[in-house]
Length: 192
Image (cartoon, rainbow, N blue to C red; front, side, top):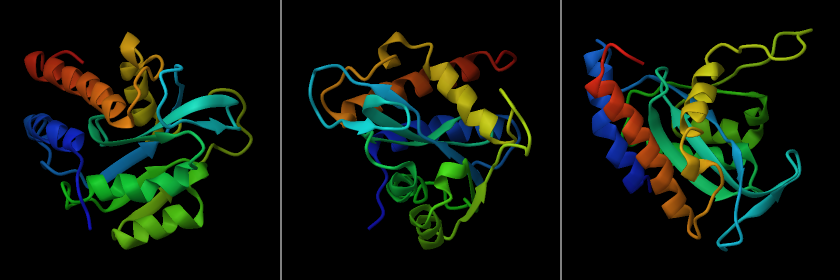
């Protein structure tokens, strides 16, 4: 049934320490999800074509809390739709964070597969949409947190592309980047 990945279990103690240090509950009640696509090298392994971004590679399906701390990660071929991968991601996150009640996501998750995944895990799916009539870059409530986390991960050269043959190794690389960021926050609590 439900299982948490090793990478998800590795980040949990750091998430708990940082949340409790900030005076918050150890387990978050809200998770924010998104899926950036990254190119892969010719090292092999599963990869697919994402037509929307015209990219051959993989997707890093991530879940963060409202502070941008990594709660879960799933790497899969880019030809799997975001909404279809949400169930597998929640299967990794929900067992470790029992207090989760809601999932914030962008409009690509407004599909039956994502709704069913949230229903199975007893979560409310909240779709964050762009303001009507907006053009250009607009900061979206709640969603900016996960985009900021992806920006932090982008500082790691190793994550600029997916150089790994196995998706599990790619998950480990992203997890190491997240742990490094969390350790930095623990060592320097007054700096972000």
